[in-house]
Length: 359
Ligand SMILES: *Cc1c(COP(=O)(O)O)cnc(C)c1O
Image (cartoon, rainbow, N blue to C red):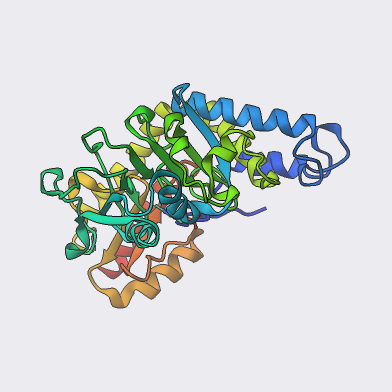
């Protein structure tokens, strides 16, 4: 078997221990003689799995009792529609802070359902900073404030929680479970699974219970958070395999010491990568230092004619998926929870050698 160091932005690396458990489990899950994909989601084994996943997630994130933990399909993108459909009435104002491509997409989706006020927009500097909160133009009566705490493409991460009593809706797809947060700062947290939770196909939503009743009466049943809250997320057949893997990832994260412990590893990983970039004239990162992402580290080469060579040689050295997003160019190392410190050290050694030979 040969595994590479995988820096994919998503779907992203999963812990090897989890993959090995899956491989062992597949033909005969829990002695049932069937795989987890072949059993009823309403059977005892699966119901237990679902309850354990929720319990562990609640423990990992210290989710308060007055919040529901939901698992849906549709990815983070579907939540971009579900947020306005569950929190606003037609014509209500909703404030959006756009610090990257995903926030822009969320605002575009919400415009179909409510009155979007763009409170701040960092596109003037190519999404390389977070506009100071004092410059935001928020509406007086917003139903909610939408932010993207980590923008995966440009590599920009909030280091603060916006002020005020308006429920904050946060798309945490690319930094959920990467460091401790206070869930009670938020009204709604949503995250597609394929970065820090598991495989694509399942989506985590954490919602404060008092917000569930704001739903539009004509909303489609499957687009209604309350229906998931009232059915243990079994509104219809859930993505059972993805849920099973998410459960394994939550257990793995607990084994690592939980979110506090992994946050320290994540800080070290990102810290040494940015330091190497900043102390070199060969590599650079354009993001303001106070809001650099600990999960997605884009960097460009001073001479972009070397990009293809960098990608080819890094791939040959077992460092996969370093190509930057087309809107940013250059490289991007996504260093989610399952990407080990050893992977980052190997990347750093490669970068230093590539600079020595080509710089
Ligand atoms: C990956 C990503 C998305 C898209 O998620 P889907 O599950 O493909 O809908 C949305 N927002 C952020 C911040 C992301 O990183």
